[in-house]
Every structure is written in structure tokens, then in C-alpha cells.
Image (cartoon, rainbow, N blue to C red; front, side, top):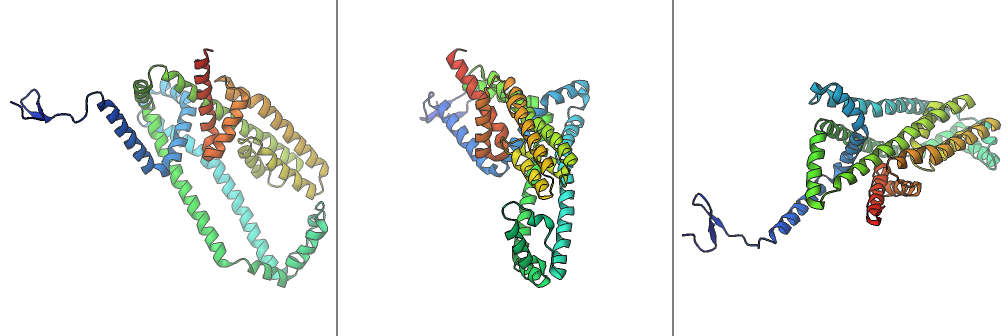
Length: 363
């Protein structure tokens, strides 16, 4: 006979009677699971951006990866995931390495110029006097501050060595942190390529149990939005960078490769590219090439207009039937809320919301 407060199951073993009614237990399990999920997210909060970037890269590259997987199914466990991850790493590291070499050369030249200015002074360059509106004042300031050796040394000595060391440490710490996050992104990306189909199937089953049928269509909409955003932002931005980089080289802008890369990065954010080719045009004006400056700025505006009003809306909104206004709001709001990660999260959220709205409206 079972003791009070205990239940006898098969095998003769006694188990404690449940403290909660049967109807309350599923809710309690859900609350405990939610609490554990939030606790886990809080524990790994520092690595959530790395996980987010890995998911975005995996979703964007998944159609191409599946074609490669169909051609080489025997390499699904190690070879293909490793190769795809390495390709993604090179896609980022090669441009960053080229930019680092360019910046290193610029820093070396700047250090040499600072030493020359400290020892012999720095004569006023001709382009300083040609600056619009502020040319005479800038020339006078330069002559008093940097032209004479004593003045140049005094000005450069004002920059505290401790401040420079602190700035270097801050930059080094930030760079190390970004490198660690990039490493975790690549590690996560490898496992997503290797086990992506199984993880997607498990996630779909859990979502259907929680939210009911129809969740798969929402997930497909979000994935299509991410792929469209990658095409509309990254590929179009790279195209703008290439076109304007050629224009920079033809017009005689200094360091056209660096300015082209900066234009490609800035073009991924709406309304940011004019800042880069505006600076390039200003450098041409300072060098006395006013006609070339006007041509570069006008060409940049034409390229930007075509990209932002024709190519980009078709790529981002075409796959998801997302109006351009919601694409723009998703991008800008995503950047404000999540940084660069928001470039892809924002449009995906907007695409899901528009899909749910159309379902509710019966469209």
C-alpha cells in the first residue's frame, strides 16, 4: 500500500505526488524553460553579436552551400563546412588586410612628416591658402604653429605621451575584442554549415509546438529578407565602390583604392556614401581640379540615385514583396538599435511583420 502523498507506479516504486495540478504543470514547464533561456542569453550576451553574424552569413550563403553539398555529399561533415568557413573568412580578411597595409603606409608617412616638422618645421602647403573661405586664416595658423621648427616642436610636444599610449591601448583592446568575436563567428559558422539542416528542423518543430502550424512560412520570409538584404546592401555597395573607385582613379583622387573601399562600406548604409565621395571631391577642389571634383560628385550622385531607387529596392523587397518605405525604415531603425547587425535584422523583422499583417488582412 502506497504511503500518503506518494503514488505507486509500475515496478513497485513510490514517487512523490505532484505538487501542482496537471493543468498547471505545462505552464510551469514553459515558465521554467523561458527563465532558463533568458539566463542562458544573459550568460552569453557578450557573444550574441557573433552568433547573430554567423546566422546571417549562414542564411545568406545557404543556397550556394546546398548546391555544393549536392555535388559533394561525402564532404558534408568536415570538408565542405571547413571550406565554406574559410571562404567567408577570406572574404573579410583580404579587404581588411589591404586596408591595414594602406593605413600602415599612411601612418609611416605621417610619422616621418611629424619628425621633419619637429626638427625643421613644416612649410605652409600651397593648397592650404586655396581653401575656400578659411584659406588665409588656415595659412596664418599653420605659419605660426608648424612652419618654424620651435613652433612645430612645441605643438607636437603638447600631445602627451601618456595620452598617445592610452589611445594605443584602447585601440588595441578594441581590436583584440573584435578579433575574438570574429573568431567565434567563424567557429559558429562552421557548425551551422555542418549541422544547419538538423538545427533548422529542430527549431521548426519547437516553433510549431509553441505557435502552431504556419511558422515555416514566417521563417522562409525572414530568410528571404536576409538574403535580399545581403544582395541589396552588400553586393550593391560593392558595385558602387568599384564604380566610384574607377572614377576616383580617373579623376586623380589620392589613394583611390582606399576611397573606393570606404565608399563600398558607406554605401551599405543609406545616405552615407555622399560623405565619402564628397570628401574625395573636396580633395580635388583643394588640389585645383574643380572640374574633376564636380564630375566625381555628380557621378556619385547618379550612381547613388540608381542604386537606392531602382536596384536596391528590387533586390531587398522583390523576394518578400516588402515596400521600399518599410525596407528603409527597417535598415535605419536596425542600425540605430543594433549597429551594423541591424542592417540585416531590421528588414527581416519588417518582412515578418508585413507578412503577418497581410495574413490578418486576408491578402
